[in-house]
Amino acid sequence: MEATAQEVDAAVRAAHEARGSLADRTVRAAFLRGAAEELEAARDGLVETADAETALGPVRLTGELARTCYQLRAFADIVDEGAFLDVVINHPDDTATPPIPDLRRYKVPLGVVAVYSASNFPFAFSVAGGDTASALAAGCPVVVKAHPDHPALSEYVAKVLRRAAARHDIPEGVVSLVHGFEAGVELIKHPLVAAAGFTGSVRGGRALFDAAAARPVPIPFHGELGSLNPVVVTEAAAAERAEAIGSGLAGSMTLGVGQFCVKPGLVLAPSGAAGDALLKSLTDAVSDTDAGVLLDHRMRDNFVAGVAERAGLPDVESPVTPGAGGEHTVSAGFLTVPASRLAREGEHDLLLEECFGPVTVVARYEDEAEVKAVLSRLPGNLTATVQLSEEEAAGQGRGAELLQELTPLAGRVLVNGWPTGVAVAPAQHHGGPYPATTSTSTSVGGTAIERWLRPVVYQNAPEALLPQELRDDNPLGLPRRFNGRLER
Image (tube, rainbow, N blue to C red; front, side):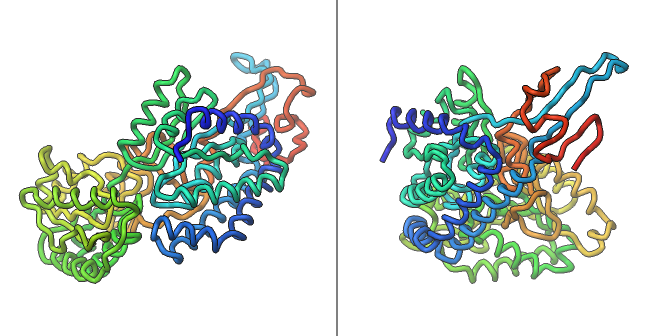
């Protein structure tokens, strides 16, 4: 099923030729809504195909498909509103220093976007997922590199999207699909590809990021690569609600068999009685978790080997041993280690790397200095969480200080919650400092569209030559900033 270089070239060129069909925002929005309708109409077949390839289960997959359709409609609404165009108009002002000419600025689509599907979200981060939806919303055709864990589903979804395109007289090439490792490499190198979106491993994402930068004409590469998603539990919080924190942590770290990019992978918990009570709750909850199936055998092998290597480090204990649960399954568990082992560089640095699957590391700290020392050594993350007591959450104690310490580490900072579950909302940000992502953008939420746009300014252009978006009479009724005043 591996696409040849010639097939990749044909897919990219077909997408490039389809750019003009997305120029009309009304058509674009209708296409996105039509795609959601077609996906919903094919729901039973899609879920059955997805379950056969991923074993994620009909309930999880049905919910993920619903999220995908919601996301498509949300971007359609963004396209209709038009604020994402960032229209700014300045009339000439000879009194300014220096004088201001007639300037009219808005954003235009970059061109063909290469999308690299994720394994763990066969709908929401795959062929019709957030990268594709936001790129189409921006007016960019898409070529998707299918994930090898769900090739049949990828073909099915692409077929549905092409059917939606045909309903609106949009060429089928507006969403193309290629398979295979080499096809992915050819795709990032293609001269007509203008940007790329990726969700996957640090190793694979960094290789593509470097390839994107090494092109004769470098292109933006928006990659989500890996995240530890640290959690800090204050001593007061553990003393106040150890059982709830332990059971909540267990539910978050084992959700989806630990295969979510925002799984909490490192927890800083206090030593002493309060921390012991938290660990007892965590032990009870994780022990009651059934063994589960990972997405493929490669991931299972990496998980089993990874937890074994971590468990073998000095001073690391396994209150509930993670690893192989059967021939095809894995068992959830967690490791503990003194936080002092992580506060300095050494062999325990492995515990500061993501381990994909149902495991977390609980680092027991003696004082606030150890918490600060460990946090200072962490790489960038998608999320960071703090569990506070009621008084700390009300502004007493170190609550505000902890938030300030966590903010440089992550794109989303949570208080008294758990990071699993990424709401699709205008204010959402799903990204973070490297290696969480390779850019400052988000792949979830309304502002994800900004990745596929660039600003352009027209200076002293006659009104008759301007695009409608930049004309004084605003025929499209767009939100804009006109001579310094915001118009809605």
